[in-house]
Length: 399
Image 1 (cartoon, rainbow, N blue to C red):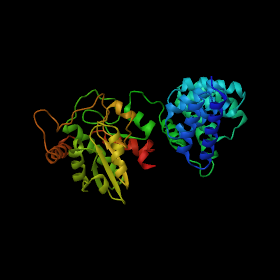
Image 2 (cartoon, helix red, strand yellow; image 1 turned 30 degrees about the horizontal axis):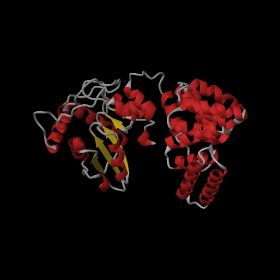
Image 3 (tube, rainbow, N blue to C red; image 1 turned 90 degrees about the horizontal axis):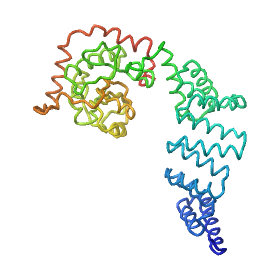
């Protein structure tokens, strides 16, 4: 039991925390809210206040714990709504739904809670149920851009591309001036790209990468460059890279791209970067030496640490295009390049990294360039160029 003295002490700390909060002294306010909870663990308002501050600091698990405690002490619209919000952010949409439905029981017909229920269902992958939740909300607020956006996102996930396009275009038309679109324009591009196909074969990596992300997929030696699947291979050859570069240069010449520098994302990629630097007749530079004006090609042979590309990009201050020769399938969850060679089942061995012989970057680059020149003609190359130059032109780096 908490005696009156401790209850009064907790109230004093809580009020002081609120005053510090209003003065903008947020970390000091947090300390006072913690003191209030220490004095009276049953003070729901202090748990709520501390939860807000944990969320502000992106300490989401701690925030959820405080909102959950506040809910157990004194269930309220605010405690349940904030608990649901944080659980969605933590990737726990099913648990969030339970909180939001309790919240809706306290505020029947509340549109804000209805939206959050639909969004939690969308995050949980239950897109049809999310659409059902959205229908009465749209009937009451047809000109709400966020409702239209979520509706279009659900339709997109369900493969209803024409309906998704209509919803997303309506959302874009309703978007208030100066409001960030939070990916709305890109979602619309995805719908438009999918509509360019009659049907996308789930095994067609080239079509999938284009439709989902606007990415170019080149292929390698042994394929036709038009119908590409995940490669079961465990290593690349110089001839594979030679074929990729042939196709890359064919597209580059069509688009009249002019690159001003090449950057190797890591040392293992340097031979490929050197080969491209030579064939483009531009210097190979370090990331922070990339030109402010012009275009830099960032070259990665295969994805080892996904976060490495982000680190390199942070040091490149001008415009750039990213090229990854052989990302593995798992890497595509974390790395979306502008141009991809082949997608493999697992990380591949590079041709200059063999147990018996390690070539220098210059020597390996010469072998790549020799392969470019020695390979027989690529019979479908004109059709490969038309694939992106004709119907499928909504590429992410050309927007």
